[in-house]
Every structure is written in structure tokens, then in C-alpha cells.
Image (cartoon, rainbow, N blue to C red; front, side, top):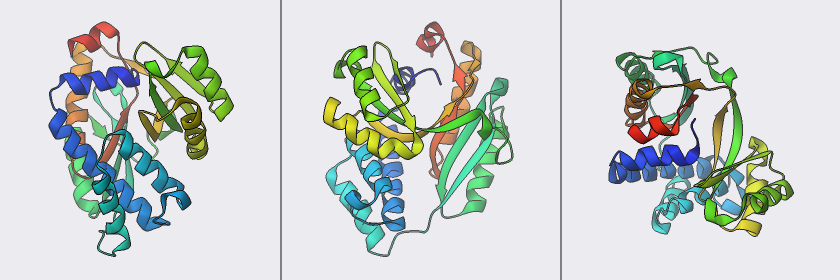
Length: 246
């Protein structure tokens, strides 16, 4: 992935903000409901729910929506969702992981497979590309949160593994099992994060030109338009010049 901030800029430039926000809130609500249903409905006693609520708040999701999603789980009227990971290849051999939550496995599998094939990709078996990624905790702060040195020191003290800083953001990486503890410690030293979540971090990336990026974005857009899809990760890299032309 060519950096958190560049990815955000693509989404912004595409002029899909309202649609994206509605879809984002739907995804966040689903994650909150599933987390609350699987564990304790109190975020302080349920790390997964706490992270889901934290991410929802960082995305400016209204408090009423968050409380409604938790209540749905405790009220017994929540759908039963299965968490499924699909793996495959996009145009130019880019590895892609699709994370979904669904109440109908057959529908989702058929939809994801069709989307891959219609957009120059191939859906593979589970594990076909997963070995190219590491499951990591990711905490993102705006560049204004502090200097590179200050953020690096805060990250080290919080128990993080790595920090990537650029003109737009500080991206802090940690072990997936440490995300709750690391993000809590960072909050005390740096304040509220822009984003806190578990992600797939590619070990290697595939460099794409403009044509390659356009083909890949067409596939990713189509996957993200599926209501059952929670997240899409791809191991691409692209220059600033290419990203600016998207």
C-alpha cells in the first residue's frame, strides 16, 4: 500500500465521500455489533469492542449510532454474521485480501468471485496470498500530532514496533495482540488517534504505473461496493506522480 495518506487522498479525490461515509458507518456498526455479541457489551471489558468504538469515534460516527449498534447485539435481534477472508490476485499480479462479514456465505463468495473475474483478477484459495502479509495493529496520527522524534519516542514507550512518518501523517505499527495496550498508551501521550485498527501489512509490494493503478482501483472500488465487504488490502506501491493523476 502506498501509504495511509495517499490512500485517503484517492478516496477524497474520487468525489464519493457521502457514499463512502454511509458505507463506512455501516461497516463500523456491523463490527461493533459483532464484537459486542461475541464478548461483553461493556467496551472497558471487551478489547475488540473497545477498539471498534474507538475507530468509530475517530471517524466521527455519532454516539447514537454506536449505542444503537451495541444495543442491537444485547437485544438479541442482531443477525448472525460469519467473518470470512478471501484471497486473490488483481491486475498485474497484485495480491489482495478481502475481509467480509456475511449472513449468507454463498451469496458473498459468489459476489466476490464474480467481482474479481469481471475486473481482471482471480479469486484464489484461502492462504494463496495471505503469507505475503503480516497481521498488524495500525494507529494513525496526523502530522500535527508531533515531530517525527516525539512520535517515535511515544511509540517506543508505548511498545510499538515501527513508525512511518511523512508530511501528512504518522503511521505507528505494533503486534496485532498489542493494539489495545499500545493505542491506549499513545492516547495518553499524543491524544486521540485518527485511526486505530487491525490491518494486513504487505511484506513486499508491486510497483504500478498509472494504467496499472487505474485497473487495480476499478477492482478495489467494485469490491468495496459490496455490502458484505468490510476491508480490502492490496500490496501495491505507486509513485507520487502516479497517485496525483488518479
